[in-house]
Length: 201
Figure 1 (cartoon, rainbow, N blue to C red):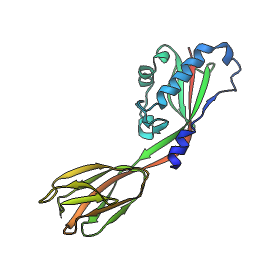
Figure 2 (tube, rainbow, N blue to C red):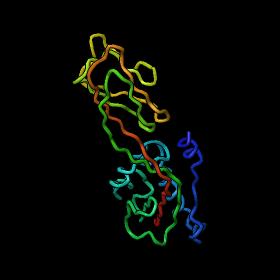
Figure 3 (cartoon, helix red, strand yellow):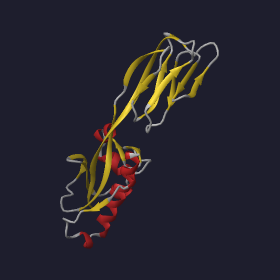
Figure 4 (cartoon, one colour):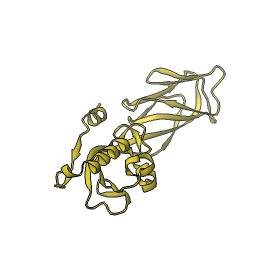
């Protein structure tokens, strides 16, 4: 709920420090369009709307920005996230800036071995579980009491199960399960930052 509330009140902030904004509506429109496109759900750098993927931001290039934001194809521009410039082309210092508050998300995979005869609690903020059954005899897997996998005669290989980021997860198995199940999960850590686009066309 905290994450939803944070993203729900995302604010776009115009850069009041640049006095010439009103006389450069083209640059301002391009900066706004770039900020909107880069923070949209379908952006190559977001995990969802207004939540940017830290690793994707680190790999961002000026060419990728220009491809995704057509108004920037012939412009000088700079994209910053927090205190870091993540993509820059030309010299946009005399241009117009537009800022948007975002969350920067980092995801790191972690692994556990689950005793199939017991339940296992996992933290919130993971959206999937990858389960391996090579060393276990398990027919049924439950997450928070809900059956997510079932195969009479035993589950085999590996399986990926989507789960809710908003819930603490309890993983459990059927009463006759034995062995250990390999569990890989990917909790998301977020921090608030400002995404700033400066454009000088």
